[in-house]
Structures are given as structure tokens and as C-alpha cells.
Length: 52
Image (cartoon, rainbow, N blue to C red; front, side, top):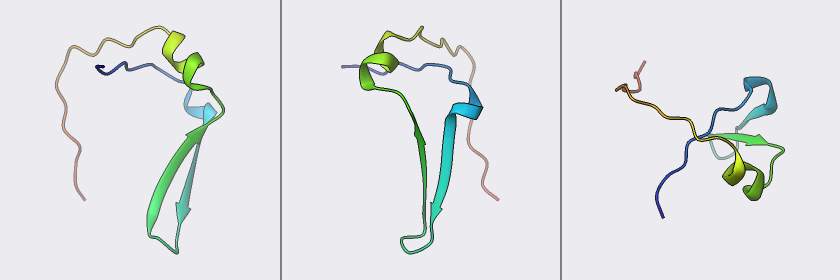
């Protein structure tokens, strides 16, 4: 299958915290087909997530 990264407008993403399950959830109003047809974001660097 593979992975297909796409760039999205940060304002299009809604982030919510579920206190009952202590989890974060990010959603946006786009279909799977819309995301599949979006231009692929080519990341050629290397990065790691920081832990606070």
C-alpha cells in the first residue's frame, strides 16, 4: 500500500482532547478520496518528535 503524505492548511484541522480517555484527536472535513487525490508532500529531511 505505502504511505502518501499531503500538506493541509492548519486551519482545516480541528484538534480536541478527550479527557475521559486522556487522548487527543485531530480531524478535518475531507474524504478519503480527496486526500488520495491531493498532491503528495515529499519530505526529504529527517526529524524526530520531541518529548517534553
